Length: 319
Image (tube, rainbow, N blue to C red; front, top):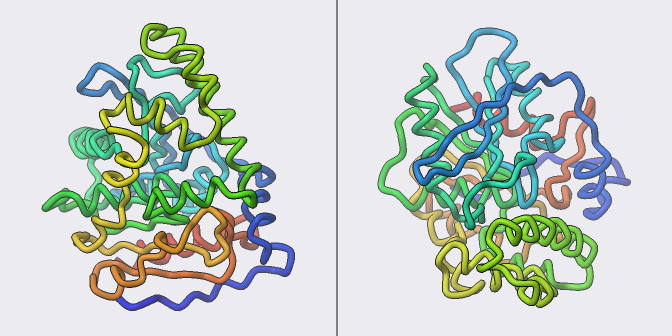
């Protein structure tokens, strides 16, 4: 589909991409959501945790929420989305990736931007254990790349999957990494690196023969982390091989489920290759909205409901 026009125009303060990113990521608070945790044991013996919240009325519609890098099911962009969906006839399930629910996972491997086999197991579990007739996917940043890759890399997905919305998506992982290594993003990159290294030290206690002190000392950038840990733990040659294989951009032409990508023009995490204009123009199932403002998973909105939360609800209701 051609480019979808955007009506998003925030107040002057939130037209600054960095301010909207920081406010929605660190300062925003969402109250009143009740979540119940379910532990899912995976086929390889590891586990991940699902955080469920229910619609105020009985429903057979579910939104599966996928967080970003070093996020979890309690981040405001996840809980805010779940709360709005619950208020409008959807149950919500927030997927915490391996090692992201407050407890280290048991294997050397963990999660990354393209680990769609875990998403596939979660969806299979939901379909076999719950009576949902409609499932919608809603992903943010890394989670957006993950869901788009899932939808586009296989010949068919379960018929219950009716639509998807992916927000602030690094469709080209290499392009996004290059942006994160620039001076304008140094504070974000340092924060991500600090959290990732803290988890890697936990891994080192579990697998001292596979992660050395010198390995950790050699991690100076996010790309170093992917060279030293992500690629080795998940069977890629190196960081560039990981970025090449797992970027969703190459899978977008194959998506057959109505899917909306919302990437702000002033998202400092995204390089030019992260805006799939050609792919949206040639795939009738792919919609691309590029608001002028919004930062990275920012999109401030009135009444503590972001623009993208309301936009996702509207898009799912229209399917």
